[in-house]
Length: 132
Image 1 (cartoon, one colour):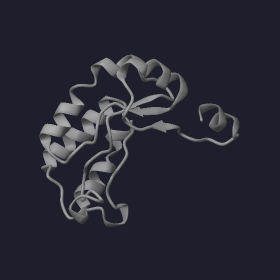
Image 2 (cartoon, one colour; image 1 turned 90 degrees about the vertical axis):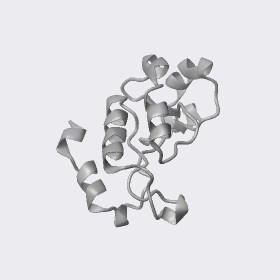
Image 3 (tube, one colour; image 1 turned 30 degrees about the vertical axis):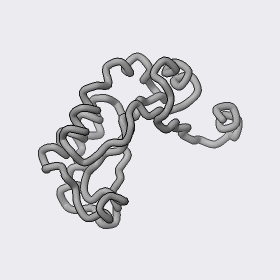
Image 4 (cartoon, one colour; image 1 turned 60 degrees about the horizontal axis):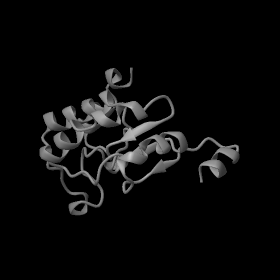
């Protein structure tokens, strides 16, 4: 797949989902643009902090064009969870979650409906300091 995407002549991101062993991380970094480093995240502080503060061993495999992916950001009302009707994180936990993922240079993938994003999340995601 790596070769087919590279040879297509189009700009694409090749992302691998979770399931592979850590021992193959060097191959993933060589063949893909990002790879999941964890199982699925949930909207709890325990999940966010456990995942976010356990990424050290993945650091050598990230760099320009190659990102460790500790899973999506669980901010606002996450689609598919409780019919998108809630979030178990406090506002401070969501701020910490996004900040930690930015520090990790992780893909900042949103799992919420952008057309229904609340004002808090919109302000958080549009914060210029996040994108410098």
